[in-house]
Image (cartoon, rainbow, N blue to C red; front, side):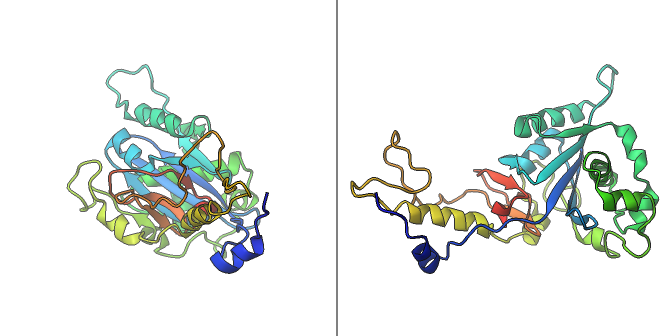
Length: 286
């Protein structure tokens, strides 16, 4: 069997050793008729950095539209408020429908947290760290859950210091106005015509960057498939002797959904009909 000339691949096709994302990510969620989403990234030695905030309308349908086709990356944690009012009559049960969609997407890869824990992260703390967005309570609650996860589950030292008031005013988590700048508007904010699946124009305009890392990986797959052994059998990644007629050079069909990114982080899809799997916050989407 012929050996792959890796130096030649790097020279001719620019395929290089995969870069490792130095950050970890935590996604906070506040499920309901309007679901809050907050994303932070951090390292062991840095204060958490705000990536984006948003509120998803339309209950479990809107939540599905935003996250469909995703899976959780190894460097990502998901922390969500758990619904605790199962037996009360007349209570909005949309949060548990969202919870069902969460389980369908990510199985047990979610840390569910009691709503009572939100009192650990006060309004004053969010305001002092320039994280406060007035009039958007769901994304603020999602942010609280992300911070609580860092405190309780990760035992992140910088977060614990901040909550104890040891980092202010020298080291706020964000600059003044940054939380508003990193908030992704949704239908109901004057964008779209109020139906799930409609074009969310403001987010689409804000995040048109292509997932270059994923595109490079697909290009690499196509190039590898051109290498063959002496018998003409393919040796590229994904080759399976039991499967015939695999075409790694197949062009991506028109109409597949493109990902929106915020600082290299998955932030929903541009509107279209067909989805492709997306890795949440992994190096693949950079």
